[in-house]
Length: 317
Image (cartoon, rainbow, N blue to C red):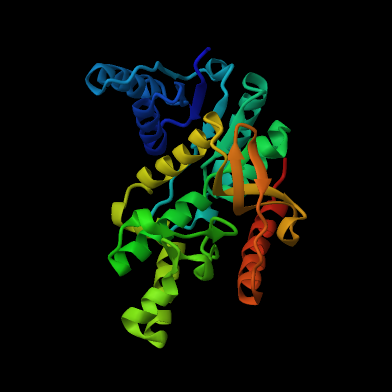
């Protein structure tokens, strides 16, 4: 059986970490594309030279030619400018839209059978643009955001309660922006509601204050890292989150993951991408799971999606 093939469009920090993770798992052969000459070739060679010491056996190719992504089973788009301190994800829309248009055309022409995972920001707009230009079925084009946001939510809960992150389960819906929707009601530690544990620790009133701070930190987590790094944005956590999606597709794992998917009536949304729980497997987004949201959750979700709609409706092809 031929090896699977992944193409990374963008060989910056996220692309580089993803390739390293994929190599360690021997997930697939990889093509690392970038418009900057020498950068993808250098990173690919560095990882290949690490292979004997690491004990992994895949082939990594660096290229400046879109033609080399031909035959890819999965294409992951990370290309685009990263945020700088003081910038929101939305501030990147004009420049990154131009980059996404070029990438989407190249995917359509060179990898017409691939699944596509978009990581570039502003995520909800970029995945919409990619879907429109490629014309691929909705199950084969998706955005990586919910896994990352949910992981951040879980990490902050684990830090607060001083429990293992392995036992914390959280879910974040909506757009990948400052109005994302961390679902407090569904957050649990091995089945035990997080709010119950916080109330046991602090009492009801203080528990809600603590949770509100965790939610706020989750929403602004990307900006917090940008502010600390000064010259870049998060890359370990986005790459690792994309890896979860890639493995689910290439290994047909049928994982239930929060994914930016095209909604066609689910959650009362029609024709827009938003973060929702999905079953992810060999056919990409195989099922959208529609949760029962209470009034407060529904209001927050609708507000988040309305922001996505406003940005998307300003797009021009």
